[in-house]
Amino acid sequence: MSFLTDLRDSGKLSQVLMAAAALLAFALLALLLISGVLLYRVISPSAAGGELSPESLLGRPDVVSFSAPGGTTDGWFFPGRSTAPTVVLGHGYLSNRQELLTLVTALQEHQYNVFVFDFSGHGRNKHFSTLGYRETQELLAAINAVAARNDVDRTRFGVWGTSIGAYAAASAAAEDPRIRAIALDSVYNDPMDFLNLQIERSGMDVLPFTPTLCRLAFRLMNFSGRKTPPLSERLGALPGVAKLFILANDNRALSASTGDLFLKAAMPRQQIIVSKSNYAAMTSDDKHNYENSIVQFFLENLPPAGGAMPPR
Image (cartoon, rainbow, N blue to C red):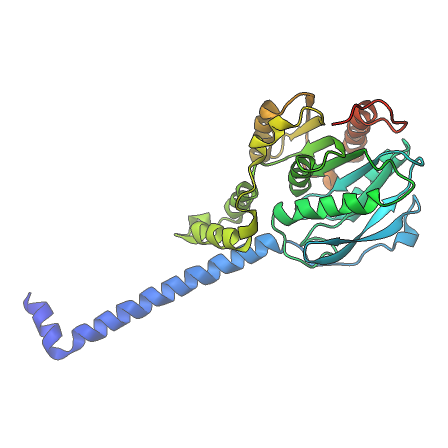
């Protein structure tokens, strides 16, 4: 007690308290800064780089602009058989539409119309990624834009997606009855699950309070999506949608979530296992086999000639 009394009497106690308060404020500021940088890196995964021009692409794509949350964006429409259904391809996290061109070709060769575009935070799309919330609305807007054409089947769409694209595909199918078949590669249940995975992969989850602050900021940024049910509550209500769940051996976390969602999804459903979750990084043989599986799924459940699918 005499030590504290001496401090108080000498005026040093107030100095110690001020120093402690300053250190605490600095630590809090540092945590906020680290959390902010981490979240920024997650939701702004890639800068726009060089891009192929549509004129240089095989398949004679049309550039289709459409209004989406945050502004106008555009996609490439690759024509197939006139009045055939359209398969929309949703790229994954850290990817873009250019990396899907060989899958586009495989589908277009089987008479499908194919549409690809960049999700927020990827490729040429400048907006921040929301890990699924805004991406779902972008996908729905893309379908509306394609359905406005007079050379497609306006009532039948298929969607393939991986990671972010897979979440958007399943989420959009729960809202739009025109989506008749979905192929989901490495899908997750909720955008917050994917955020947690990215925090863990960054290695910064060991810092105190950082994951909590990131999650809090992410929820505030996506407050409008707070009432969006997880996919596990919506896939069971889609009995009229054909579903292909693709599990990748090299991604344990997303493989587990994909398998869990498969078990909770309504029939019809099927499941396959592949070696890699990154389509763009597959070997030529693996990519060829993968594309054959995707094409076969759509041929069986969304035939180009039409007339085989009952209305939802």
